[in-house]
Image 1 (cartoon, helix red, strand yellow):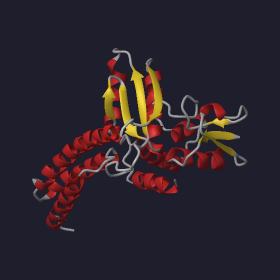
Image 2 (cartoon, rainbow over the protein chains, first blue to last red):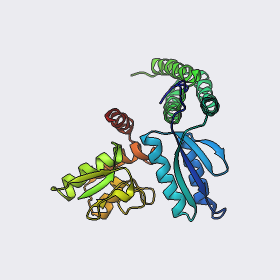
Image 3 (cartoon, chains in turn brown, blue):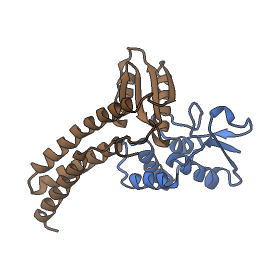
Image 4 (cartoon, rainbow over the protein chains, first blue to last red):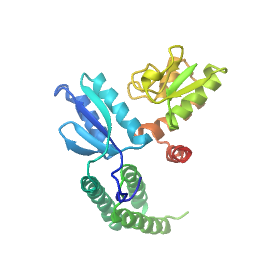
Length: 163
Length: 108
């Protein structure tokens, strides 16, 4: 599941094609947030994609149900990009979105300092790191950097907190 | 007889345990790839569009607890872990959830 796709043939993706009424906006926003949290790539209006595995297929299945319950229409598809290049572009796009999120973590961890307040920040950043790794299908180098920055921040924080 | 989707996943595995242990000690399970393959005599769970599935923000494990009036707080503690591992929506603070997800991935 990790790393850039390098196999000779493109891998399998799971697509969710959906339409939701414009109003009420609450379910629209809930679905949008969920898809964002899953790290899905937007292929077009109401069309998102994730690399297919048991977990992503299941998640998109449930989102589809949610869309239908909210009065919309949804279908879930398994598909392969027609070319390796297309898949690489998609993966690159997803990886760069994650890279920006890891960079934000690195920046905050580096500026974190020490003292009691830093323990709270550390916990928050670790939780955020966990969230980002869960939606990271093509880990960029920034992931390693963020992990290292968190470890360093943790060492500084623990050294400053009496045990 | 009970039916669910093929493939080990946290919510499904936990539901099967719950059903066997607390609802139907003689339970037999069938695993299907397509919802239409569910036998007529089976009760489907943790599948799209069935009663014992995700309902109103609950995972299937929580839905089964509610539908069967299982109120044991220990089961609800387990439910929090299953919910977090399955839905990852941070409704509960359940650090055990990540390990549960990983061990399920290891079963595949």
